[in-house]
Length: 499
Image (tube, rainbow, N blue to C red; front, side, top):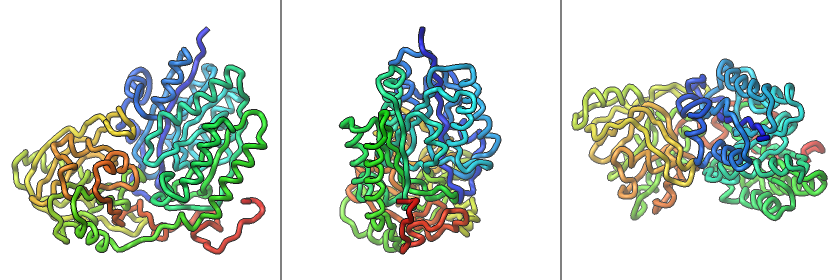
């Protein structure tokens, strides 16, 4: 008799400083929320849900997808949205199943729960205490005891930008399939160190995270342990369980896994200075970009990036680039539904004057919205939909909402109705702009842009623009984090519990 699996996705990286609420409609914008349509949209894509569907197909299992929810990072997930998503998953598990495969983020904060993933797993365990559960997580997970207690197997992305999302699910799924076959008996050990690093400096492609991830990957790939993951954490969340963490999945005995775990975490603590971010004036960064020869010169505004909860309408970097006279540039997407509407009503070829961006205040950051008055010609109008061809989330459909291009003569600016982080060239090419032929490419991103744009870039200049995703953690007013915490307490020493 065929096995029955429950496969589900519930993903949100919650920026508690973001002014943007996250209702269920935010999740629905990414596609179907359940059933056959959700399966059709995810199957074959480089996503955790796509990876788990592949595992279920290979196992010859019957499977249901009661929830396939993913929303762009933003503020707190509403209580109603959280309850709708978790209830759908729990109700399906209640019907009975042989395994549960969950694509989660690891940094979801709801209005009524700090640990969205841990609470979901708690609810599943209350009705199905023994069902095997595989969980695939984002690299920016904020790990908790509830998450580890609730899962049978856990794996996290090894990359940032996340080009291994499907593979992360496959890694968890393969271990779970071996457990179902009686080949292995997964036992997890985990720990953390009180380090809150800026996302800009903890990517596994560079030190010091490169060494830590290398240790974990080698141990898993050589079969020393079943799975090993390191998580950088997500600093734009004012919650008590912020830390750098690691989870090791062992086979029956945990001694070897505990040795590896402590080696990874002790190395992280020894190299903690490498996780410090050093800010710089924006005017200096734009001037540096202007002084460089050749192109494209990619200018990444990491203070207002959608994939960390930014409003995507802060104009500080574009304004500074115009002020310093940069030419032959493309920029965007800027999220401004009102300006899109104005451009569509004017029509292609029309001259328009816009109050672009700056529509949203950020009280948690002490920032007021500041629109930029700008004139130009409407160059193109699209539905904002394209399929990703680059290495991150390959095959998924991006829906930016109605989109228009403003051509100022020196800069072509993509303006969209919805927020969408530019990690794929399609955000420009779908509306007739080839960023490979531009001198300057201004985008709002921290690391994900590297998936699609690093291969075409002659130079990359990081820009400290304003916004609620700033990399300088001193700009945030934390009231709920657990102290002492590095780098806020630079002279702290580890007590017995942390070490």
